[in-house]
Image (cartoon, rainbow over all chains, first blue to last red; front, side):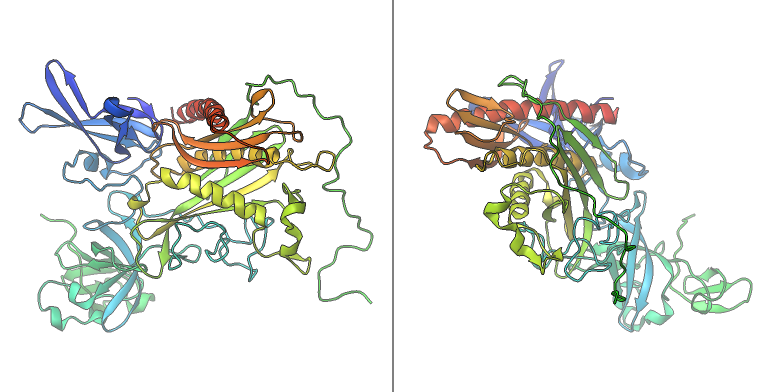
Amino acid sequence: MSIVIPGQYITPAYKLADSKIQKYYPRKGAILSHIGEGANRIPVIVATVVGKVVYHEVDEGSEVQLFLVSVMPKSNTYHAYEQESKDFRESNSISINLPKENDVVLVKITKINTRQAYCEILTVEGFGNVLQDSGVGANGELAHTSVPYGGGSQAFSSHQTVASSQSTLTSAVTNDLGENFKGIIRSQDVRSTDRDKVKIIESFKPGDIVRAIIISLGDGSNYYLSTAKNDLGVLFAKSENGSGDLMFPVDWQTMVDKTSGVVEKRKCAKPFTE
Amino acid sequence: MSERRRLLGPANTFIPNIGITSTTEEAVKTRKRDEIRKFFLKTGLIENANGSAYLEADGTIVQVLVFGPRPIRGSFIERASFSVECKFLPHIAQPNEGIFNTGSNNNNGNYRTGLTNIEQKISSYIETSLLPSIILEKYPKSTIDVFITVISSDSIEDHGGKTTNSGLLNLVNWVLNCSSVALADSGIELKDIVSSGVVRLDKEGIVLDPQETGGEGIDGLVSFMNLRNDEIVGFWMEGDEDLEEKDVERIIDGCNTMSKKIRANINSYLLEQAS
């Protein structure tokens, strides 16, 4: 296993070994880049993060041997990393686990209204937490350098005052510290049958932990999520709006509190298939 | 009557003499013209940043923090937005302070509300240089923010009333190299690590990593992606002398030599850290 750093050449994209053609594709933590000038310009797989090089051979049964090349960060703790690095179809993968379409995520419901439920994305399944809270407020580590215009405990950076903003869109405003990526589950995305009869209040309550799939990156503020599958929906919920005890699913739309016996409606997940 | 609205210190306090230049003799420059000063580099000192780096080169001390990718609000953006903010600690004399009229940015002399001109210049140079190396497309709906703190800077004195720019360019050189390492430490995907070199072209030729300020000459700072066909990503020249094309070439070549040496050091440091 070799360690590489960003910019380091891993292997040329095409190689001849034992009179067989080997073709390499970049995956997580690697890109295809053209190195050299003029006639000597060749495609090379280049690392983009610090980590270990992982090769995976794709058995296509053809004469050309295909390899997927990815770089696994040393700090990596994701279970699905290896799986994903083998996935031939997954081409847009990134080494930091930002949620993307078709990712299964765990979310916490933050507020609901009649049309949709708002939530905060906690983890991407198999990949660990979405984002460590890396916020440093003006009261924190860097308080001595300068105080933001309004003073106090706002984020150290606000893009209005950042000097260099050639790539920064004015619409890009950072969230408050500790805020996470957010999502919306619209009422028509709660379940796949009787979609027009869904009542959000009978599906989710604030505080519920819900397993959902990302169907769209949405707008700047929210991802769009869906629970329209048997294995998606509420995993953990407390009765009486959180003041009660943990509830257990009875069927796909009912949960019961085993201490008080209260029955409440939820769109339950059936995470384990038999 | 004593002020009751503010928290004042005890009556018998005295103000320490921060910022007064010591009278000790400056170390005589013993490096050769093509020699680069040694520097100390460490990553990961700040735990709650996604990436951080700390660099010391003689009296220049720089700390860089990288936050991101972190969520935004507002409308959808396909690529991450990238911003750089460079700040000097308040007691540090900034290069060319007199020329750039730093004082005007003070709010009634109480505290600074924004960046000074020189901080702005440094920030935008760093951003321009690092931008081509970051694969922004991989981070939609996010921002990547780089915060640079100049903790100490030694090459910024006026020499006999004549200010030169080699102190400034020297500082920016170390700031840039430190920022690149912080980005690499953060795990954000990079096409290559950006490194830079600074040279001075005087009558005798090229001086790598110039330490003396003052005197005639042209200073150049060039940033490269050395493992990516030596692509130039940043270029800054200061000086008021006539310049020919071959001089520019010599400056670029000199910077490239220095940049490669620094890059080699960064490489071996990162590899050592990772293994």
